[in-house]
Image 1: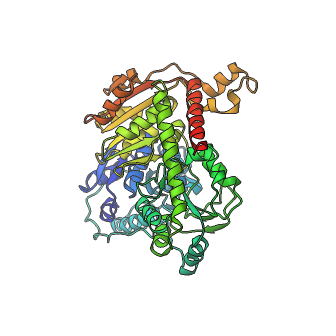
Image 2: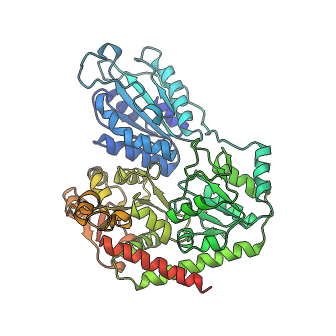
Image 3: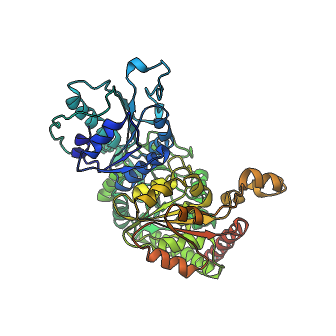
Amino acid sequence: MFATLADLGVRHVVVSPGARNGPLSLAALGESRLAVTIVLDERSAGFAALGAAKSSGDPTAVVATSGSAGTHYYPAVVEARHARVPLLVVTADRPPELQGTGAPQTIDQHELYGTMVKAFFDPGVPDDSAVAVAGDLAAAAFATAADGPAGPVHINVPLREPLLGTAASPPAAAPRSVPAVNTLQPERLGELAAELEGRNVIAVAGGHQRSGFGAAAALLGAATGIPLLADVQCRYPGPATVASGDLLAAAGWLEQTPPDVILRLGPIPTSKPLWQWIERSEISQPWVDDGGLGDPLHSATAVYRADVTATVAALAAGAAHQDSAWIDRWIYADEAAAQAARAALADETFPNEPSIAATVAGAAVEPSIVYAGSSMPIRDLDTFAGTPRGPVRVLANRGANGIDGLLSAAAGAALEGTRVYCLTGDVAALHDVGALEWIGRHQLPVTVVVVNNDGGGIFHFLPQADPHVVPASDFTAVFAAPHGRSLVPIAQALGIEARTIEDREALRSEIAEPGAGPRVLEIHTDPTENVAVHRRIRAAVGAALAQR
């Protein structure tokens, strides 16, 4: 199985140690083309594999023993399904004669992940033909995980004792597999191109996109003059990139400059003001997406089920250029909003959360990855990171938008040696604090920046924070949930260099010169003041746009 996966392009296997999966783990270790990472905690291991697959774009395998071990992969499987990440989940199982008997570490693993996987494979207990069958199964699983839309696949392997593995001739090398991509039929592509031609169009791209999207979107903007309001996860430097979509939407500028068509690309964007504006808009909204799910905004006027990158590239090749005054208006507003935000941030006392996000994005070494938490960190990056430098990518677990597994996923993204900055809140860091054990053990190049506002800081933006809506004591108990913990001594106890940061320049220096191994930087902020800072910045942007 693992020789075939290596033939097909799998580079990383994450192993959760156990006895029943021993033969599988040894087989992975025996394949010299695979980098095997041992992670003790199954939940952490699942997210490590997810992060590696999200970073590389290629399927990554994760291997568990039988029983409850595989159930701990479920959160990562859910994220992979919703974020369209190719994940190969391999679980060892007890043989049929032990099922339903109360044997130790034996549960019903048949279709363990239900509808959260694209496919379930159970080859049965291996026999003399196992090598050939395993190769075919691995190839089928790889193709299913990688084909668009990508997603997780579950391979369940029941094994009998002795669990020592057997020497066998490797299967014939599998041919390199090229993932299948859903493309639009020519008549449907022509229909979409015709709707855009001669009209004032903006494109809005949400979420993490398949490799190549940024370059294709930049070509589309250059060829057509269509402004691209791209989520920070798929933003790409280019002449038509509008990085201040969140600020423009919050300031009401989009209502003042309505397009004829909103070309929606992929999932909804991170920015709530932006997607709420799209939801309210009663103009043409063709939506290109290969996820097979319904429109969460219920505002799409036409749905094109196709790979977003391929569709954008096809449009760039054949679409006509729009009136240059249209794109100039958007670029002018984008620059005005960004300049006003920067000036407002410069006036704010550090530390504050927008400045932390902007500093991390601006000082990150090249190449690197900023892996952001799904709460305030990704929102602050989306609003304040600006136009990205090409070699610095932003990733996040925005499929299911949960906080779990963040440190593990960031560490998984670092397995190939790329420096990763994990920008996280304190709750998400504490939720996945066990990941620091193997980050430190493997000395991975991960800098964890913990924005510690002592609890659920994002909830202070909600109506429930008003004491007239929810009593202050109840809000504190249920939403804010202060914990009084610092990540610094925890990280130090696990052998990771850690310190508290209080100065903007100190943070910039730590980000720009991160060293070789892992590091934890903790910055304390006030959640109530954070709300006020955001409001002051948005007010400054609104005032600047009103004057132009």
